[in-house]
Length: 456
Ligand SMILES: [Zn+2]
Image 1 (cartoon, rainbow, N blue to C red):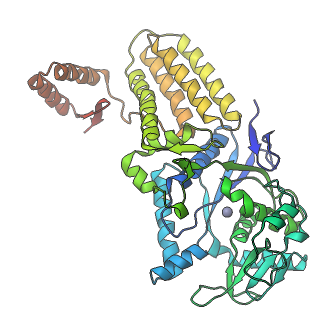
Image 2 (cartoon, protein in one colour; image 1 turned 60 degrees about the vertical axis):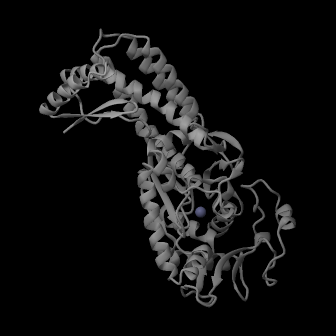
Image 3 (cartoon, protein in one colour; image 1 turned 180 degrees about the vertical axis):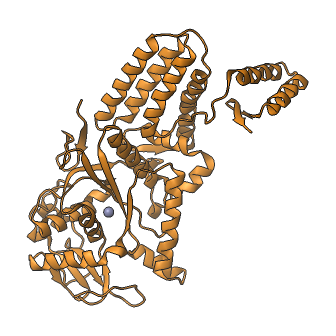
């Protein structure tokens, strides 16, 4: 079986073949740390978490790198509003970002790299662009001259002329073309700065990423991800910078982009004020519900956020968890068919994931599996095989809930007995059984989804 991915650069599904054997160098644009991230950002981060995990599941040796934009106009603006140093604002929200990432169950990233830790590399890249004739200096900074890079527009599939026509009139009249983008911004009063050959100042946004990826991966690598709104000008400009300075093409073999999360048909965005932060969302729903909600739509399809839609996801996920609890307690006759069904479902899972990470279809195969197994009488061993299989899939998807402790059948029997008493409203007997369970070292938590047994 071959893995295929949809490449924004060619607008085609292509067979995934990394530059070097099984090694995959993967980069995804991280946050600009001036505020809390919202659930639109989380969609991108969770979906690339699943993608990285699936690549590992398929045997690729993935190095997953993410940048932290810790110097930017928005950070400076926020810092000035709060009479704080930009550095402090950035540090604070970088920490908050890591908390969000952890709370979302994202643990696939190997390295987070700060822009401000790579100023030397940034300056070096700009110097090279000067030497090769792509950069020029004005009164307020250094710019990349897009006219010199004839392929500018190849990622966003726009002819260079169209880009130039569409550009707004430049604020800075010194610019050769309004679409020329910033490589270095000379310091304005009250702004943080670093020294450079072009007066003290700070880097432009796009150059941060290529400086960081060149440091870790060199001038070419396998996979670059981000949300669709980053295609132009951000990713387009990354290509121009790195391909112009290294002379090697392509900068990135596969460009993958996630569609937006919409709220009432509009993109969720800080600027529109219609956003819900990750932590607000996680105070309403747990991590797994949110991960399942993101998984329910293909990463290239916009997802519509509403309480109703997340609740629907919650209920759908509960069917899977209910199945897990059920098979964990199986003690019927052994059924050979279970092994066949596992094999069939595992193949289907891989087939759909290999098709540009089609998680919704992979989940549909899982529901077929649940439906088929539910018709059978299965043994304890069958149950264990099913759990093992689901755990393997879940190492990629990360939304299922498994019982942490193996509960002996004798204890489960008592739990069921107690449940029966409760149904009959015989609470005195139910309490007696609870006391007996406690003596044996178990505690029963009565949840909306039924009793959950925990070891004391
Ligand atoms: Zn970026």
